[in-house]
Image (cartoon, rainbow, N blue to C red; front, side, top):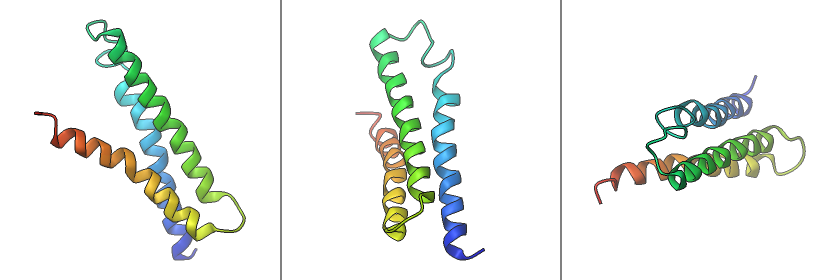
Length: 97
């Protein structure tokens, strides 16, 4: 196994964990199904979870789809995978505002 396949495998794992973790973290009684949360907030949370899951599926497909532009698709996947992580960090840093 060469370093490119190892990198694709590790990035695939990150994409899958990122997509599945949002379900486990956010679709439970403390978040999306919490009756104390306003319906509008719960709607946006479910929207975010579904968006992240679909994005994760797309990312894994981009990594393993055979054909041309494989290196460019790897870097596109890397960029797409970093967006939810960056958004989380921005929200974390700015939560006191």
